[in-house]
Length: 471
Image (cartoon, rainbow, N blue to C red; front, side, top):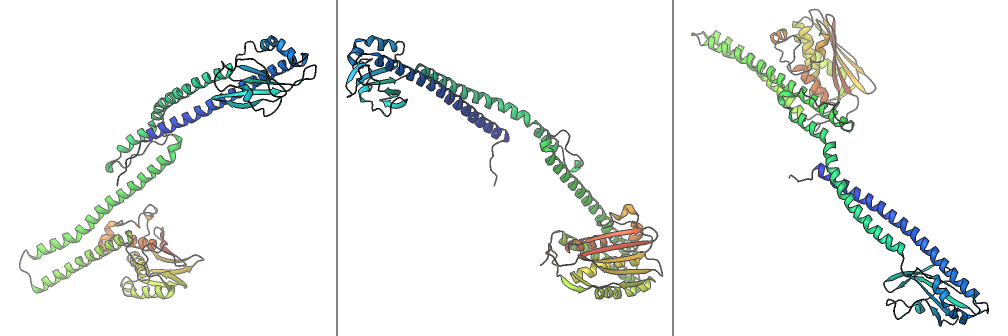
C-alpha cells in the first residue's frame, strides 16, 4: 500500500524554519532577560538612593513635626520621579507624610496597607494590577523619635522602554523567521541539485545501457558512498545480464544441435524405403540424442532448483576414502576404454550429501578421463585440514589456458567448444560442481599448467554447518 510522503525539500524547509524560530526566540529571550536585569538593577539603585536621601532628611530633622514643616524638602527629593511614592509614618504606623494624595491615585495604591517584609532592602509587592518595588527603613530624628520611611516605585521609564523593546524584538523574531524560511527554500533547492542530476543520470540507464555509471566525481562527498554502491549494483546487474544473454545463446545453440540431428536423420530415413535394420539403427541414433537432451534438461533443472534454494541436502559423515574408491570403481570401465588409470589416496571423514558428492567428483573424473592421454594416471587425493577436507582431481593433458580458468565454471562455457561438442559435453558439468560446493558452503577451484597437468580442488567445510536449502 503506497503512502504519500512529504518531499525532502519541504521537510528541510520546515525544519530550517523551526530551527530559525527556536534560535531567534532563544536569542531574543536572552537579550530581553539580560536587559531587564540590568534596568531593574539600576531602578533598585535609584530607589535605594532616594530612600537614603529621605533618611538623611529625617535624621537631620529636630523632630517629626519638623519634618512636616520641611515637607517641601522631601517632595524636592522626588522631583522628576512621578513613579516614586513616599510615605513617612510614625513608629505606631500612623501616617505623618505622604508624597501623593491617596484619594487621587490609582485604585489599589494605598501605602498604608503595605506589609513591610524587611528593612533596608529592596522587595517586590503586588498593588492591584501593578508590580511594584519598595524599600523601607526606620531612621530617627535628632530628638530620638523613630520614623518609618517607605519608598515605592510603581512604574519605571526604563521598564516601559523595555516593554517597547520586547515588542519590537518579537516582531523582528517573527519577520526574521519568515525570511529565513523563505531563504532556506532556495538554499535547499540549490543543495539538492546534485540529487536531481543523479536522477537524470539514473533515468538514462536502461537494459541496453547497463554500462552507464553515475559520475562519482560530480557528486558531493556525502553522496559518494551511495553513488559507489549504486555503481557497484550496476556492475553486478551488467554481469548478470551478460551471463543471462550468454546463457540464452548457449542454451539455444546446444538444444538446436541435437534437434537438428534428429530432424535431419528422420528426413533422410523418410527419403526412401528402408530396411528394418536401417530403421533400428536410426532409432538407436535418435535415442542417443534424446538421452543427450534429457541429461541437459536434468542438469538445467538441478541448477535452477539450486539457484532457488530448492535442493534439500542430506549431510552425513562420510568415509572419504570409501567414497573416492566407489567413484573410481564406477568409472573403471570407461577409464579402461580410454586406456587411463585412476589412483585414489587419502583418508578421513567428510561431511557432505553423498549423492551430490558423487555427482561433483564424478563430473570432474569424467572430465579428466576425456582429456587424459592414453596411459595417463588420474589422481583422486583427499587431504584433511584443520577446518576443511580437500579433494583434488588431477590429470595430465593439454591443460587449460590461464585466461580460461576463471570462466570454466560458467554455464555452457567450454574452453575448447569443438572438442567438447564432439565428446558429448553439455558445458554444464563444472557449473554443477560449483553449485554443489556452494550448497555445501565450500569452494571449487582449478589450477592448470598447459601441456602438463590440471588440478581441480573441492574444499568441503570440516564441520557440518547450517546451509541454505538444507532440509
